Amino acid sequence: MAFAVPQAELSPGALLDAARARTLDLLGMIEDGQWLGPKLDIVNPPLWEAGHLGWFEEFWCLRQGSAARPALRDDVDHLYNSSQVAHARRWSLPLPDPADTQHYLAAVREAVRRRLEHDRAIDYFVTLSAFHEELHCEAFTYTRQTLGYQAPAGTAQPLFGEAWPGDVAIDGGVFSLGANDDGRFVFDNEKWAHPVEVRPFCMARAPVTNGQFAEFVEAGGYATQKWWSNDGWNWRMEQGLTLPLYWQKKGSGWQRRLFDRLESLPEHEPVIHVSWYEADAWCRWAGRRLPTEAEWEFAAATAPGVKEKKRYFPWGEGIGDASQANLFGVAGRCLPVNACAAGDSGWGLRQMIGNVWEWTSDWFQPYPGFVRDPYADYSEPWFGDHKVLRGGCHATRATLIRNTWRNFYKPGRNDVYAGFRSCAL
Image (cartoon, rainbow, N blue to C red; front, side):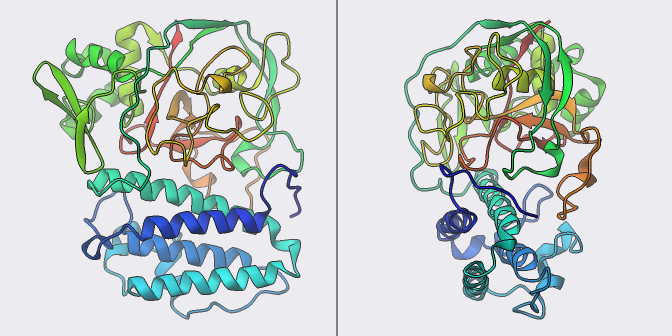
């Protein structure tokens, strides 16, 4: 399965090396009593997750095709194959200790590096492994938030910012939703671009902020059933939520927990760690709505008068820098919604890439003509009961994200780095 790597982007091997360096940095922060952690439905034990990364790379890059080789360890399929090892079992498996796990990671990485020297036929699978590892690095990061562990190195203090209010009128039209077959790596759920019609709409220039969401909370939003869908209200009751996750009242204001510390709620940062149900409830209260997936991509990838040629990123083709997007390596947290002006879309919408994943109204479904890729468990098992998110977040690496990327979570997930922007009714 061949694909092209644009000259401005890293080679598959370099992508995988960068992902592994990030993994090792995150593993280096895990203390002795944290390698397993509490048994929760929404996280993996870090010790298992680390070994799973090595297994995934070995399975796809070394154990496929005519040059396939045996596994480096006899037990890895029984320990780390996520398709076969139920989530609840991952805490009780006879896992190698942290040192042996990291030795396994290093051995796999070296074997893949040696194979790449003479076999570029595995470029696709190396890139798949790199992106898979980057997704887990993001998960390692929000797992630290879930468990109240120390913040990753480089996490900034809150930065002063301003509101970025108002809507942008977008005239709509027919455009191609999804990825074009231009030789670059994409996942199967992005395939392929197909024409859709988008009616004119108005979208907020920036994501909903903590300050805007606090108005909903202070107006009794969590206690007023009429703002919630039936499923959303049942979810809220089951969770016992009266506030967004990690928020608490402090005098006349608000605090929130960021990793292992409390801070005053940054008014102009996008609200984060809210479920689809909470985003939908805010929209009902505010007389707004969530954008459809097609509206989101139309707003990110087109420009006034130019709908037939989509942009790879909101600002154009080149991978973004800190002036354009808050992605991994910039601040380690959300920035105020007025930041990153150089990354505005052609319609003048800010932070459509980076800062916070944005819920859309749509259920995660296959595009017309969907054919699953070799990694069958990536998309197909989740169609129908997950909601689509777009745009990446502050823990997403720039080489991973693009306008057509489709993330997906169940509508009740509020532990992930998810927020939202809204549209006028």
